[in-house]
Length: 159
Picture 1 (spheres, helix red, strand yellow):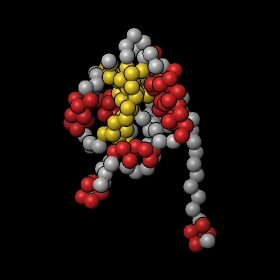
Picture 2: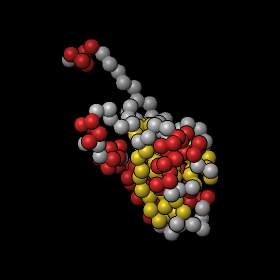
Picture 3: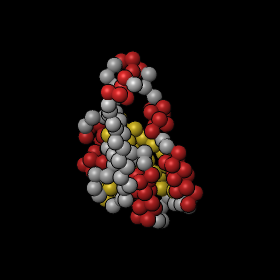
């Protein structure tokens, strides 16, 4: 089974990269690992009570889960599994260690910086993937721009 690393920002657009993996490796059974970067909390208490699974489930939307299930059904002959991994390191050495544990050699990443991680804690692991893996395939993805305007006013604060 060929292990493929794909960065994700928990949007349907980032799942498009899975379809490119299926197209690039049609004769192999794929073990797809969706990678997201996460900055660990600063306090001992927060680190002690940190749950990778809980943080992942907070980020999943219904559209994301539905699209992932559709991909698994549509490509059940090619996709063996789709799982999630959280990278909590801060440098390339930590990422190399992370990759060794996963035992992956191939990756599919977007050509442009298209992944937009939400919140201060999540970050795009694409640069780490490009620097530390030998077989990286860059592909274009279509990203729907969602413009969310946050409007702050004194009326909303005190209102």
